[in-house]
Image (cartoon, rainbow, N blue to C red; front, side, top):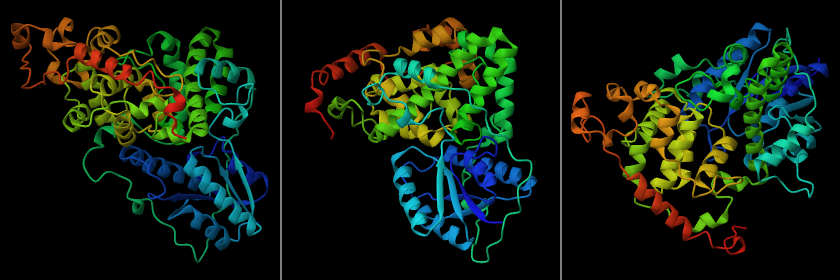
Length: 488
């Protein structure tokens, strides 16, 4: 039987995996290969993602072994490793599922040509998106830059497509006397400090866990999703984002499962539609990153290359990172992130707005911090989210939309349940004052055991004054014509 290398990247699953399925259908013995390379891009996996990756690879390896195969793990530059591994195994073909960032595209193009020059069949597949970015353009063949028309067009183009079942059995992994595989432990992915202990109680990486989480979300929570998804104290959202980021589940699997459930339970159709719209934001993020690859570091709205960001922000940035801003909803979100590798999406927008607008700290600083601390750190989603809040991306929030963290907290965590969970020093504060403790009287603070500037910080910025400053900063650049600020 001939051999096919199945190069796994952001598709760490056996079900609905087109590359693996092609190897099986073509009659090859699949060699599932994962290559680790920390030096490939400036956006190498952050610390939280590396934690997830370690456990996801372990789960995938176990699944392969239960089916009679195994996971081949190697380290080094894929441009060298993939052709060499194909040669060492005498592979007739190499299959992979596509990545969409510019570094991966350029790398994969080089590898593909090298393999073709050696007479090896190469095929790549879509395993991450509902529709390829180049298949979904406006009528004038330019990319979408606004979500609503993107979503309407995407909805009209989608057709029913049944996910691929995982194989029950796989051929034994061939042995190559010249290939020296690495162990998972040798990849050194886990943190060297005792930072990740809260991750274990919050997450269980792997394909089986992704499927269970989808089923639990659909059975127990989706009925309340549309009206309660913005409330961080509620366990309403799916928490599928890290599973999607590592390809432990595909958007096609999610969409198909929800369609099936809607057939059985028509009452959840509205909620399911609201969730699928959020899934489409992920598609939009990938669409933008593919067509505007510079946006992972540069603003899409080139006016922001001239924006008067602060440069003396190191102390404020650290206070923000550590959840010590003195603004409870921001501190709660940043502490949730540090302890669990995750933050509720509504709170992500609030903390990002404070950083970019009230503190005038460049959005790239926030993007890099999220990249290092989120288990679901996804380059496309991360870029879209930060540029949206900063006002410099496609379909961005207008710059004058500055989230008021106190009003947001009062609206979406009225009784302070989320705040008390992540800021225990405020646990005894009355709900009326917990959202802005600096407004409370000395007697109220004393009764709650709070000393502002002592056991809980004073606000590092005045929200009203800083909002005015942010709007003045925008006024300094908004009149620049795009052709005058082009980064081309």
